[in-house]
Length: 108
View 1 (tube, one colour):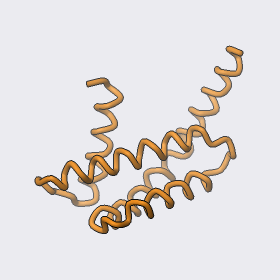
View 2 (cartoon, one colour):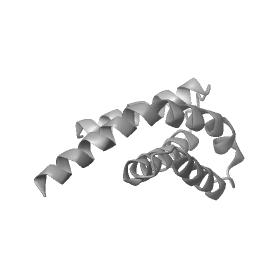
View 3 (cartoon, helix red, strand yellow):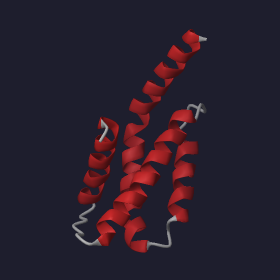
View 4 (cartoon, one colour):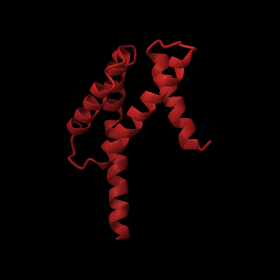
């Protein structure tokens, strides 16, 4: 398993455990799979967003949450946690994205 996969799993698992999830059945895997997809796609969207604002990413996250809203057990605790996690990462990921953009521009 690559380090990035391991860190992604640990992050997803920590988010679920923080929400109080202690499932040990198939929902353990379902919840982590859904959150992994949601988390990864939102991070990728955020990194590609050059608007300089978190609003587009927040809207993207809201749309993804609506898409999986058919599973209320999953989305209720996640909505608050996901907003918190992504707003906290805004500054860190934003500066990383800017640095990456500069480095890519230098290579061209």
